[in-house]
Length: 445
Ligand code: NDP
Image: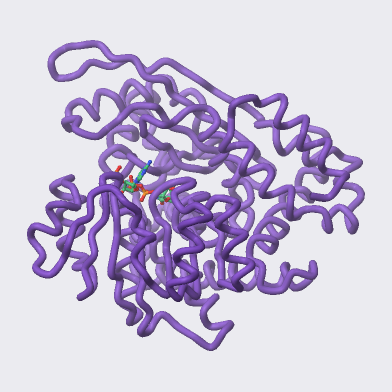
């Protein structure tokens, strides 16, 4: 790391103790930014990094709710409004028992750069709760979402902060959250949340966008080496929103996706994952992957273990942070890997990223590769603002253009700063310079 940034890093780490995912995200970005400060001493003079690492606002609140038996539960809600230099705060809500301030801040910090890379007018934020939706009935999910929004509503708005989904928050939860917002404010403010249902202000392609976008980004990386998805053997982690649509897109481009996972284990299906069956089990039945293996001839389920033990030429981590470590990366490389694109946020540890870079693997970091989700959320906001709704084809075309643009910007920035082919450097510098310029232009705020 550039010695001028070390002191700033040490201060950030010391003043945010115990937030290890946030530390990891900050260090990863700082490691790319030395050369930027040679060219832009004004960023150091204006203390841009110090300001960028301190969220503009952090909200932590109590979320009381009752289960179907009438028992009272209390969860903790978060919204971190990180940076609004480029537009209203924008980023998802995560409902998962692992959620605490350090995870919300890592996600919010990454979101600043990701959103800048999309070229859309959106700032960075993130939120969520340590609520565990698994095994809860629809009625319990609704009561939780209503209680969550009863506090959150006063902090968000079309011009202020626009949440969306993430792990544990999909169309059902966005519906309950929107309904409660509308009820409290007496405003049909479509642009306050994205990921809405298609018939009440949502955008076509939004559910598919993150997974599709990740594959489009990977396809652009493969093209730089004269390759494509056609004929690739792909391994995917996760089996949620991002994973399902990444699998569908990769297979539509001629790849065979031979494995995917959930938190209990993984399935191997040499014939290629049956996306419709997977979707039905995961989205309609809200079931487990064991059921996929039970119903699909030729597929096997492995309980526990790591999906990265399955060999493939392309890996798409689409589950959660730090799910792919240095050992898993080394195994993938020795099994013939050529490319990785992160559908999840920070799924590869720093050791894993080093292994990929040293082996010359094409590596697309999440803040670039999975930006298609938030970009399409911004397209949803555009449609809401103009009371319009676009066709699937038009929206998908916009998504493709945005992903190709992000890829090209990352590649060009990496070249410009002397790190050709390094998409981590390209994404970090490309996003940072845009935000830093805007922050300086807007004065000391
Ligand atoms: P979902 O809740 O739809 O799916 C998450 C998947 O990951 C599930 O298969 C889940 O398994 C698995 N998973 C979650 N936590 C863990 C864990 N601790 N260990 C192992 N497996 C786990 O979430 P999404 O698909 O929306 O999100 C996946 C990733 O993509 C996240 O990192 C998210 O931040 C990122 N992302 C999502 C975007 C979106 O538009 N939704 C946009 C950009 C990034 P199980 O069901 O067993 O828990």
